[in-house]
Length: 422
Picture 1 (cartoon, rainbow, N blue to C red):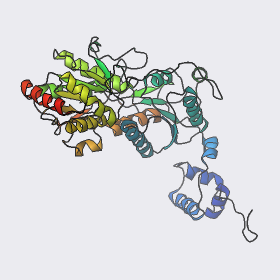
Picture 2: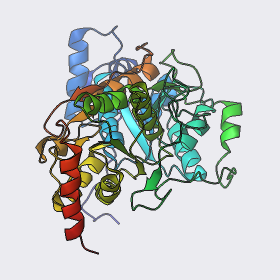
Picture 3: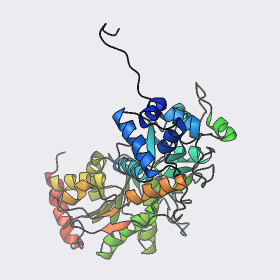
Picture 4: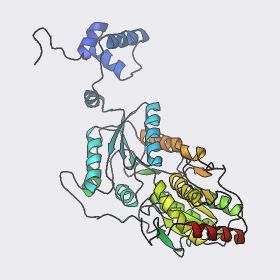
């Protein structure tokens, strides 16, 4: 209840601004919507009145009046991981540069009701386009089959044919035999198959939200009509993950390594599938096979726990599917007395800030998250960016060196095994 001496006030509206600026309400509306048919002096007078009255645009009313929300919806998941987090920030920056705001719905990618609820939440706000974070294969396949009725871009998806939605496994572009499955696959803890993600139950959950099929059939009318390009089904903005993985393995092989291990990400992630496909394709092109493939989960702990399996395989070099696992691997190797890169060379992926300042500084593959986001925003705001996947960049630092003589390495590892706790 308000105090007796306090007069209840409401926020200033268009009527009050018009009166203060001595113009019509239609003129105030034109200024709000950046209509060019307003004299500069009049525009300045209206803006000054808005500032003086602390006027705030009512976005819901603006959508009703103009069919424009100037808002892009973002459906996001797994943003605690470096790639999705950096991409989310970049989408916000790119949208603001293009004159749009961002409304984000964070969802559980394994919970269909959560995903559908997030989509409905964004649609209800009248967003003019959607940017979908879909790093998981099952989520990308589900979203990729839906029609949204407004321009939509899918971010962080692998290019078509490389562990992409609808494919059964990793394939390297132009090399149907790249993923032979011959290499031993172990979980990060050393148990076969551990750490691989299982596909969730695919049954539809209806609950309080329409099914994905229902959304696809009806089309998701977002209310915004400004962006005119883009199909109803999502386009993809992607980095060439296969090329990046091939760069990483080529760097190790060119240094003279022939026993190269791979610490992979979770199999349910499209990027993980594509990076493994690229690594195996590059090895095959050189007449090599992986010394071992160890399944991880993107975390430093997974890399740390993979170190013993790497040493047991006899590998002299490792391509880790992300920098966090590479740094965890290096930590464990150093704890065991194995020098990097003198005894084992390591290459990561992503170019996280920590990698540059570890010891040794980590050689890695850089993704241009800013350009990835800019393209996605351009897709949903009317521009036509290149459809080609973005090219990654190899960043050479200090974690790769030529292999030592195998006899010397085996002698050193024998001494390490004797010291290791039983």
